[in-house]
Image 1 (cartoon, rainbow, N blue to C red):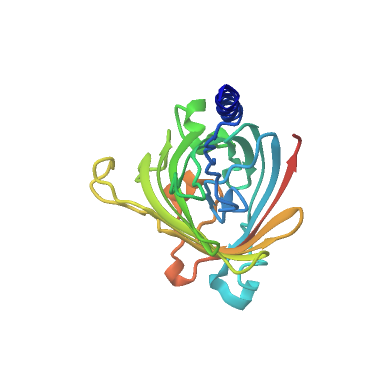
Image 2 (cartoon, helix red, strand yellow):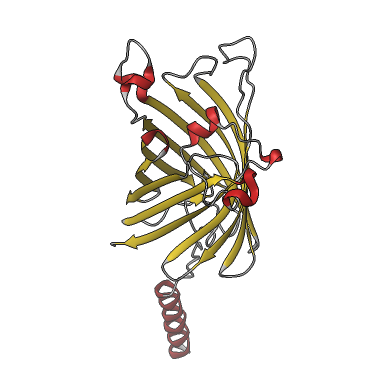
Length: 293
């Protein structure tokens, strides 16, 4: 009897020790960001919520031909004068932060930019949207005679700030909305120094390689910040549609858009192209990413 009791006791003791050595651990599964909401940080004339991975260098070529409204006379703007060109570079020094520089033909703008992703949309909807902040400062590189009397270097400066919110819907589309504020230290007579805009743009996936792009950016007639009794030469909306092509090393965008500039504050204050009248421009963007991690 004593042996039986001792055997039962030792058996229970060993089970307790085994249970302590093999506890049940509940592991919390991390909710990862959605895959490829955008392939590029650019969508025609707009920024997207996409920021490449840390230590990525990006080279960008942006080009727009002349206005299409002359039809076959200049082959819908391809042989027209006044083409718009911008070349830029971007770098991601830390996660979610991109710094950039670009040089444009229009007004010889030198633009310095920063973009930071505050939140990334996740696959299980822990975070249902992506939220990104973008801002730049541009320096007008024209001769000082363009700035009138009492010239100061500060007259060359303009600024742009934007809040972007996007959501990817399944594998077929990513839609984003934005609101922005543009400011010029000096403008022509009758042109406001400040402009508030809103926009809606997106990417619709056709297949792994191709996608359709669209944009609509609307400068608002905000009476609270206007400096004039009437809105003179109020800028037209920047409307565009494009086709995106993915290759192993590049992303190409072919598009038609109503703005002649790639600098967003210029489009917000100075776009006088009416897309309803066919005042659009063919253009393309080529981006190339290099990762050094």
